Image (tube, rainbow, N blue to C red; front, side, top):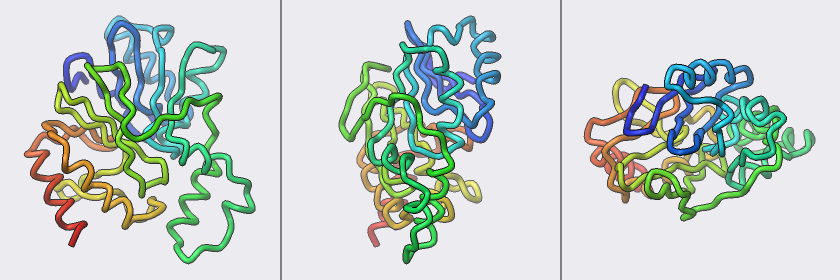
Amino acid sequence: MEIAPGVHQVRMLGADAFLIAEERLTLIDAGMVGSRLMLERYLRRIGRRTEELERIICTHGHPDHIGGVSELVRDRDDVRVLIHPADLAGLRLPLRDALARTRDGAMRRGRLIQYLTRTPADPTPIGDGDVLPLLGGLRVVHTPGHTPGSICLYAKRLRLLFSGDVLQVIRRRLAYASAFFSHDHAGARASVETLAALDVDTIALSHYPTWTDDANGALRELATAAAS
């Protein structure tokens, strides 16, 4: 489904991905292992091909977002995989560190999830404030908490925010990231304050339809609650 000019929300296994269809193709997240066929079917519908894929941007290192990367870049050395280095470090943890005792059970869950996730091949690190040459300038916003390297992506020209799993919808209201699956839920809540400073019309959510109901107001309300 096209959610903005040249931007498509694509159903994948585990989570939706977002396809930016310009001269070349960029994919934001890649679903779980086995998602390639779903992307190929969608591309055929819009008259494009996987051979046009130039980059995959990973919003964070959970298997429902990067599991499908390996099958998309297989036998391709011209596709760049972009991820925040804080999540890349987690994906390379040895099992002993992933199982290490912590005071926060959620942190242990997060480490185990990352340990069980395949590391993207030869990734390119991206960080807060980086601007990618997409949609007139796609800015990387580091929003740690759900995972240490969680990022959102902001297209100022379209007033469009790709939120990864930093936001969800509960009882028809915009809400913080899942406490159960987050490494640091307090940090995830605090990260929303950064998003509230952006001018947003549409929020592209990985597990829900796009949010267009006073996006600025909803983000400010969450930020205010987090600060208090």
